[in-house]
Amino acid sequence: CIFWESFIAPIRVGGSWLILKMIPLLFPFFAILKDKNNRKNYQKLSLIIQLYLLESLVRITDKFPVNYLAIIELICSIVIFILLILQLRSLKNN
Image (tube, rainbow, N blue to C red; front, side, top):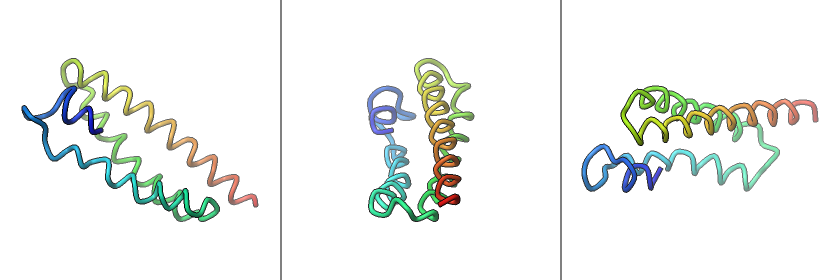
């Protein structure tokens, strides 16, 4: 997020406030690191990751290099979401 919005393909020349879009990911990430058995942390992250999935779907129609970065973000979002669902299922069985 930081390199995308500041160096590679910023919306405005010189960067923009979209650099801060990665901050919402930090809260559930550190919560999961602190307590790996708390299902609510995984649920929060699964809700937040959907925003990144939607952003990538919107920005995939932009020009090069934004469309390639959006494809990478889309793939990462889908993989993270699937892994979260699998983790939540395994916690439910325990």
